[in-house]
Image (cartoon, rainbow, N blue to C red; front, side, top):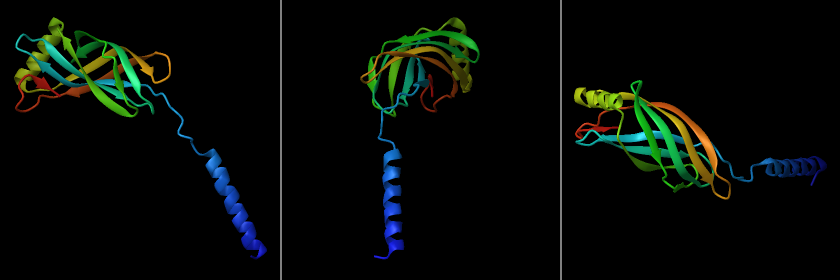
Length: 160
């Protein structure tokens, strides 16, 4: 093999080894989780069943231990969503936890008006979620999210 081809082969092999040494080894990453409302269902008494979407952006499983979130709908307070789901969610996945909730009067009226008129609502969740990543200690994250829910055709009393 000529010297120039041998040099090129050695250079290419050295570059491949350097690239392999610098590549990620797939280490575990803990990322901030997210919580949002997947669905809000109003019963005949005006109480709510709130399905919370718990999103794990980490590369490892994470147990959602407790949730304490202040809920506002269209700028009106609707109470606190508190739960202890103890739900383990695999890495880069999501799951649902249902919270029974008796809303504050102003929040109850906002949602009832929205459902009666076929309108959606804006909501805000603010508070804390306690999670435990696999093989690690419990951590607290602050949630401060805004989103919207709209009426579901054919399902009276349901916003998604």
